[in-house]
Length: 429
Ligand code: PLP
Image 1 (cartoon, rainbow, N blue to C red):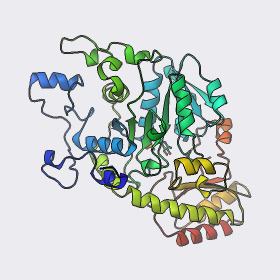
Image 2: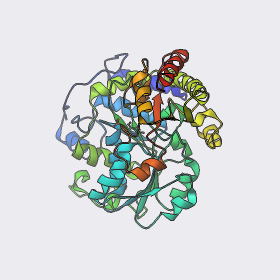
Image 3: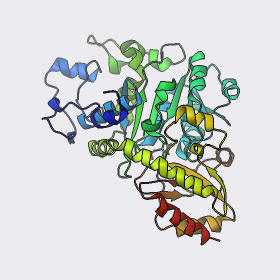
Image 4: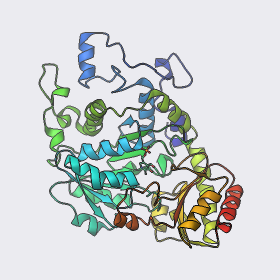
């Protein structure tokens, strides 16, 4: 099984182990029979893969985890209850005990809020850069406590593309990890591990589930980072939860090697903080994933048509869609995203706040909804909704101004969407 379209339908599921059910069953069971004392101990210590309690692992969620790992080219994944749980767990797991994270300013609002305002309460600090592709600026922020570089592969809402390969090289030269949020492009359009990323996070709520019907997230581990290189004390500290058969505490790096990060996410984060994905949501996400290539390829085509039209629309000042081909990011789009940058685009309009509000209220087909990657087309004003909690300077650096409107293109016809935008914009002035 090599092609992504095939993996999206088959990867990670063993019919023989599931009553030959054609579709992945929903295992609505909180706990599982441990069978005998030795198996119970080995399961609890993470020495044996299997199921004991659904806060730690569940067979339906397990198929989703294996499928996402296969799609991204990772060695393992943990599904969680939301994209923000994935972002928070990944950043905390890397930054634990006094670490610093270099981050792009171009992030989803709640991720910025976590790094600026909340993770510092837990002793994890961020160093923001204005341009994540300015390697000199990024390198200037690397210090003895730096643990990771964090960026979105395609930023929401600017669609700016991160130049992953040199970022990964830079990170690895300094013994730090590259963690990326790949929500916007989905693994259909971009697989960051192929370009050196160490950890990939997703809000599966978006294009992966694709129908706006299940909140979820996932962390995927490339399995090639050395967590015992001296920068990450949390991985080399013996811990009781993974004690060996004689009760002797082991370290995550020692016990799990290249799988240390994803094991720590499951055994410490999922088990302790408990933001577990429900089997029902995992089922909806698995159903959505089956049509990922078809949905996203069509949405990219429509988004490109809509973006091109907006560049010629009265009252539209600028259009952000790196896939357009006439932006400074053309070369990055060609290298990383040959099949398009995704379903979202944003644009600015002239006039004032009242004009923006009239456009939002005037669309009939676009739903005014703070989500992306749905089968329905969505419209939102990021400054007031999705990036409301972001400090002014960071928001401006990310291009999130009060006259910016974001679209997430669904599966409707391009002609109908364009007609709806045209009438809403014309009537707003
Ligand atoms: N990352 C990105 C790029 C997002 O756009 C979002 C949500 O909009 C999130 C993370 C958070 O995901 P969730 O809403 O599933 O928690």
